[in-house]
Amino acid sequence: MLQPNAKQQSQSMGSPGRDRGSGYLARGSGGPASFPQAPLVVDARLSARELSNGQGESAAVSEQYLVFTLLEQEFALSAEHIQGVERLADVTPVPNVAAWISGVINLRGSIASVVDLRVFLGLERLPYNPRTRLLSVDCNDMVICLVVDSVSDMVPIAQSAIHAVSRQASVANWIAPYASGSVLLGKRFIVLLDAARLLFSDKMQHYS
Image (cartoon, rainbow, N blue to C red):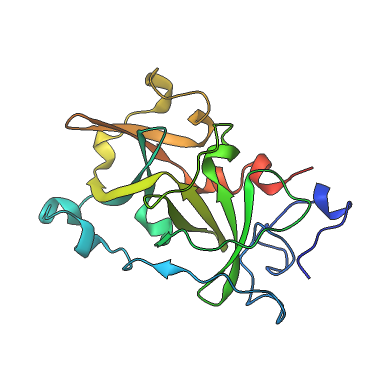
C-alpha cells in the first residue's frame, strides 16, 4: 500500500533503482488493486509536428520546448521529457507527505505523483482554475505530474539562442537551481528548465 511510515519518510523517493510502486515520487506499475482511481481528462498528445506553430524547417533543426507559466512568467521543458498535458482532475490525497505533494493520480493505468510546482518552489499556492494544467514529465524512468498555472505553446529553440543562466540576472533565485538557460523569443523571455535537475533534486527525492 502507498502509505509511508516514519522510516520511509526520510528515504529517497522514486529513484530509478527502486520498485516503482514503493514511493510517491515514482511511476507505479498500476498500483494496488484497491487504490481509488482519479480520472483524467487528457488533452491531445503533444507533438512537434502539431505544435510547432508552422515554423517549418526551423522547427526541424531546433529542439522543441513546451512553454508553461508560473507567476505570469514563462518557463519551458524539453518536449522529449513531456509525456502529455492533462487538465486537472481529481487527485487522491495521501498522508504523511511533503506539503508540495498534492497526491497521486491514475495516469493512463499507472500511479503517478502530483507535485504542485508553485509550492515546491516556495511560492504561494493558488486555487486551481480551468487554466491549471498537469505536465506529465518523464526523465530516466521517473514520471511526475507537475501542476502549473497554464500551458501556452510548443516552440522550437535553437541551441545557439540559449543563454547561460549565470549571465541572466532576471532569472529568479527560486528557479535558478533547476534552470539550464534562458532565451529571448521576440518579446518573450523564457527560462528553460532541466528535467533531470528538477526531478532528481535532493528536495524532490527526499522529504521529512
